[in-house]
Length: 195
Image (cartoon, rainbow, N blue to C red; front, top):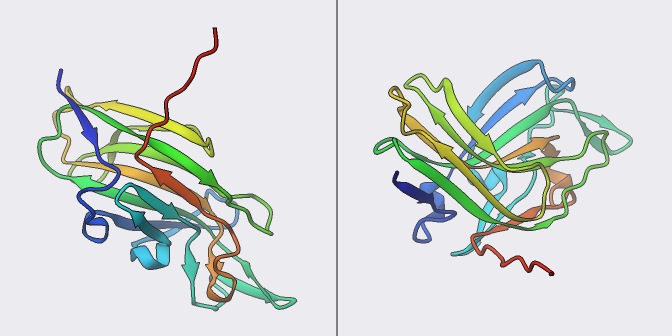
């Protein structure tokens, strides 16, 4: 069995190896509305250094009623979003894949109802981007993560994506940088076991 380690960052080429995608839901969090690719700057995915990524809530400068309702000077979100910050490969896909790193910091917070959640993922897709198999890390858990996906027996796999999924409310531009962030590193820390 060949084990392939999926990188957090590929030779500092963050802007060319990472992609962004947003799925938009109604406030019930289950009624799907739309989905679209998104630039990393709006998705708030940033390379801090070759080994660390910052990921913060999605910022939207559109102040129409679809996204926000202006109430007492605040742009109250009218949608729930599922934001993927990911890398993708489209060849040599039948392996035992491993993705690991460390959620160093998680200060995500909101003034509105449900808070943000984040986890790491690996997903295998067919040609039409239907999910064939996936795995995720626990939600909001700081510290090390290590997830694996065995695709050795999936014959119709066409794409593999790995990265991070954040669920939560969109943020209006004037309120950006108030909802916290998470720092993700490829430095896996040693765990001491007391005996």
